[in-house]
Image (cartoon, rainbow, N blue to C red; front, side):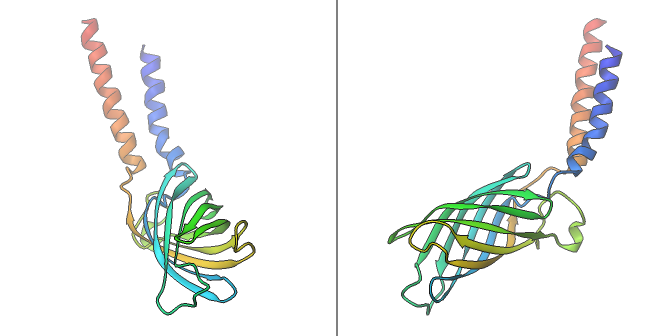
Length: 185
């Protein structure tokens, strides 16, 4: 019994090191600006609501055409993002792009995340985190159109820090150990 408790305690003490190796969190609500070249440059602003599990990122992206843009530009674009975060770089796809006029197809995206200086190497999302990159339409009526985008994390999702997780686990382990010891007496 003592061996199990010591092994569990050692594992919990090493847990923060394993969690620190995780990519930074990009989970939360993003403010996005984008320019796409649909025969002419078209400027958009919008939001992205992203969730993250490990290095897998997913979410909904909604972009609306800025005022005074050419008629060829789709008025609104909505799609589902699926991406992989490798350190501070990401690659992925946006599928199901739609606008009121119909299907826009899909696109590939790639770019990088920049953490604010105050965040250091923290895995927790922090206000001021930015991302930028490029997109290339891979299917639909605008195939081969391309663009660039930039975003800023407006509202990070609450994330429990690795140290807090380790303390919580130790508290739970200590509580369960006390229950086992009391039961034997």
